[in-house]
Picture 1 (cartoon, helix red, strand yellow):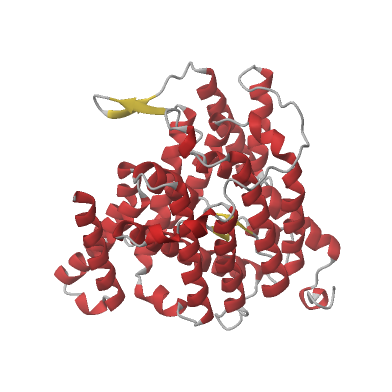
Picture 2 (cartoon, one colour):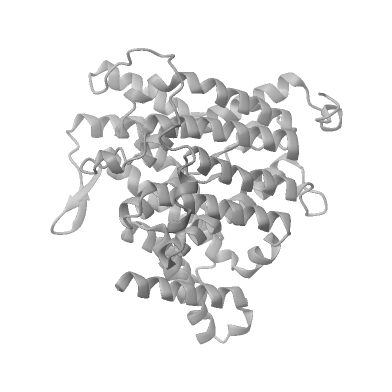
Length: 441
C-alpha cells in the first residue's frame, strides 16, 4: 500500500494521510445534512409531498456516491481530492429546475446523468482544454460568484432573515422568532470557527446549533442516533426511465448548465488543490485525465443513485493543509462516508434554521471569485455583473448564465474585440436566445 501510493516520494505516512482524510471529511460532512434537505425542498412549506424527493433515499445516495467517488479518485487518480454532490448545483437542481421550471425531479436526474455522460466523453477525448479556453475567464468567475450569491440568498430565506414583502419584494424578517435567532446564533458560531481556522468549522457549526436548538426546545430530540440505512428505492434508477423527457430546448439548457458548472468547478478545484499540494509539474497536472474521469463518472452513478451532480470539493484543501499528499487520504474519506450511512436518524432533527448558516458561509467562500474580474473594462464588467446579479434576482442559475452569455458577444463586438470571441461563444449566444424565446411561448 505504501508503495502503491508512493508514501516515500511524498514524505508522508499512514497516520498523516488518515488525519488528512478525516479532516477533509469533517470539512465537507455538512453535505450529508444539507443535500437531502435541499433536494427534497424541505424549506418550501406549500410544495406537494408527492413531488418531493425522499430525504432518506437522497441521504443514502449522497453518502454512497461520495464514498465511491472518493474511492475512485484515491485509487485510480491517486489524489487526496474528495468528491460529493456539489453545492450550487444542488441549489440549481432544486430551486431553479424543479421548483422554478416545474420540471419533475425524475427528469432533472436524467438531465444530470446525461450531463455526466457528456463529461465522461469530454474527459476521454481531451476536449476539456478547448472548451475551457473558449469561455472567457471573467464569465467563469462570474458564474461561481453568482451561484454563491444565490446560495446565500436561499440561506437567508431559510433562516427567516429575508422574507417576502408585497411592497418591496423582500425585507428583513422577524428577529424575535426563535428559529431565526437560532440561525443567527449558528451563523455567528460558524463564522467564529472558520475565522479561528477550525477544521470542519461548517460541520461543527451545524452540530453546535442543533444542540442549542434542542436545549431551547426549538428542535426535537432524535429517538435514536444509529439506525438502519435508508432505502434508495424511491430514487435509484429513475433517471433511466425518464431519459426520453430530456429532449426539449428547456432541458437542453438545463443539461448544458449542469455540464458547464460541473466542468469548470472541477477544473478550478483541481488546479487550486494541485497548486496547494505542490502536485503541478511544468504548469500541468499529472494524471489530469484520470482525475477528470473520476469526477465525471461520479456524476453518472450519483444520478443513478438519486442525487444531483457529484463533483470535486474545494474542502479537500483542508486535508492537504493537514498533510495529505496521496490518494490514501481520499480512501479514508470514502470509508467515513460509508460509516455515516448508519447515522440517518440524526438528520430527522435538522431544520432549515440549522443549515442556513452553512449555505450563507459557502456563499461567502464562492464570491471570492469577484476579485478576479476586471471591473474597469465595461465590455467585461457588464456581462459578468448581469450574470452574477440575475441569479439571485431571478431565482435561477440558468437565467443568470443565459443573460451573461448573451451580453458578452454584444459588448465585445461593440468594443471592437469581436475577433477575440471563440465560435463556441457564438453558438451559446444562439442557444440562450432560443432559451428565452422558448420561455416566452
